[in-house]
Every structure is written in structure tokens, then in C-alpha cells.
Length: 379
Image (cartoon, rainbow, N blue to C red; front, side):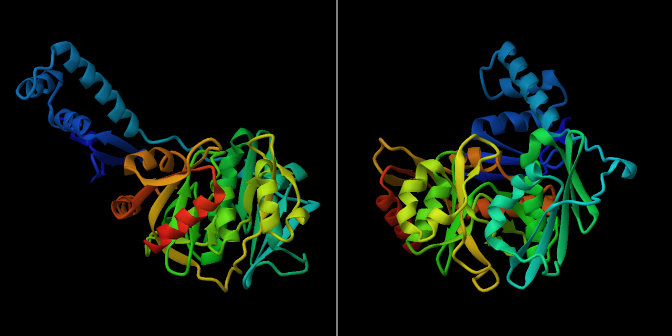
């Protein structure tokens, strides 16, 4: 039998199933009909047995049965394959000797220093935290070193090696730095988080709503618009979900907005002209970072989040909010997020998804978009 290829966790959401495989930490979202075929495959002794079981309940041809068996077999073997993680030798790790590129950031009562080995490396991290810069004389609680050796970037926390990443995958460094930063701010470990979503999250004083969407679809610009209209941006582009209470925690970075939104946002933020202009590391576009309005350490640090909105800015479309199936949200949410590899946290993630309501906002009118969000908070 093929039971050894079974998912560790599975749950039904709407008309689909979500399967989680522990070895690879991968999620599959499949239809009810495919789930039935997978079930037959898992209890089959071999391909002939698979075909025999299918014939008892359908008129599937031998050829089609063979195709299904082969494709399901390859799929399940792929998601049950553990990734290879090659750790560098201690002697191969770079060490920081001296740098002119360093910064200290203040978050409430905590200060965090980062030593960058070059200006180019500094520009990968610093812009979104520039608003939190404090005088270098401040004694840092935590010190990060970000170094480069050959074609890899290395991250250290208090001189302890955290990980290394290809220079072409610098976004992995950015994500791991963000994870290590929230661990420092909340005195947590990686195992304390269910996930960190590539999403912006806004809140009022009672609950949070997560905003997802493909790059360029306006989620950060919308977050800035909502902040200018009285809501609080809990997190921009990096929304951490806690295992302890299944709530989203505050991530106090600046809100990144692209040049196309500058003229819209300028009248809404008094110091907008003074915010520095940077060039995006992923795309050759100009961006600014709008500082969060809430003071970290004084504002509430976490809220329940049971609503997800997929946003799409379209200048030629009618502005409207509608409910959608969770499967459509998962197509974006899962591939673009870091999800904990722990079985216990995977179970919590699937349980959390059962409680989430999903919406799609297509908008061309900023005023309507803001009003739709405020209605969603009140519902």
C-alpha cells in the first residue's frame, strides 16, 4: 500500500481539500474529485489494484487509469521529498572586521543594531526601517551582522550564524531578517509562529483584516490610504501569525509605496515630500516608505484576523467588494508566504483557515475602497 505517502494533516475547505506533507512542508489544494482518486491510490497495493478499485465505481479506461496512477504517484513522491539543506563549515563563515555601514533602530524600549558589510547590502534592509533610526550611541539589545562572501549573503544575530542565501535570492535574506527581528521584538522563537504572510494587515481597535494580492496590485498603497483615513497599519508586506493565540502581530516597518501613488498620497501625509526616494531592489521603480503612525510599544501589539481581502487596482474597473471562495485566496497566500514546518503549527494554520472569510476588492476609486473596508470592519 502507499500509506507512507499520506499527508500528515488534511482539512476540507469549501469544495476543496488542503493536504499538508511534513517532509517537504508543502500544501496541496485539490478538488473533491481528485481527493477521491488520491484516497484510492493511497489504499491500493499496486497499479492493477488501483485500476480495479476505480472500475468498481466508474467506467474509467485502463489508459486513463494508468495516467492518473502515474501522475498521482509522481505528485505524492515529490511532496514527500525532504529539501536538502547544506550547512557551511564554521571555517567558511565570514566575520565582520570593520564597517562604515551600520545603523541602530529603536522600537519602544528596545534598540537593535545592524552592521552591514556594504552600502549595497544596507540598501536591501535599511530603507524600510529608516524611520526608526536612533543615535548610534544607544546601547543595542540585539546586534545583527549581514555579510557577503563570494556569491552568498550571511546573517548573524549576536554573532550566532542564522543562515546564508544566494545573492540572487536576497529576498530570502530579507524575509529571514524580518523573522529574526520579530523574534527579538516579542522575545519569541521561530517555532512560536504559524506563518509570516506576504500580506499587509490593517486594524481598528477590535480586529484586523489582511490584504493580499500580486505585486503591483496596490495592497501597500491601499494600506497607506486606509491609515490616512483613520485605520492602523498593523503590518505591511509581512504579517506574522502567532501560534499561541492565532493573532496577527504588529510589524513596525515603513509602508512601501511606488512612484505611481506619490501624487495620490502626497496630500494625505504632511511630510510626504521629505520621505527619501529609493529604488526598489526587485524592480527598477522609485519607492518611498511611509512611517507607521502608531508608536511601537504603546499601541496594541496583536489582533485576531478572521477576514482576508484580495485586492486588485484597475483604473478602468468598477469598484466593488464581493465574497470569494477561500481556494482563490490560497493560490496567492500559500506560495508567497513562509509557513512553519512544525506539524503542530501546520494543524493550527489549517484550523485558522476554517474560521476565515474571504473577499475580493477590485477598485479604481480610492474613496469607495476606503468605505468598503470600513463597512467590512463594522460587519
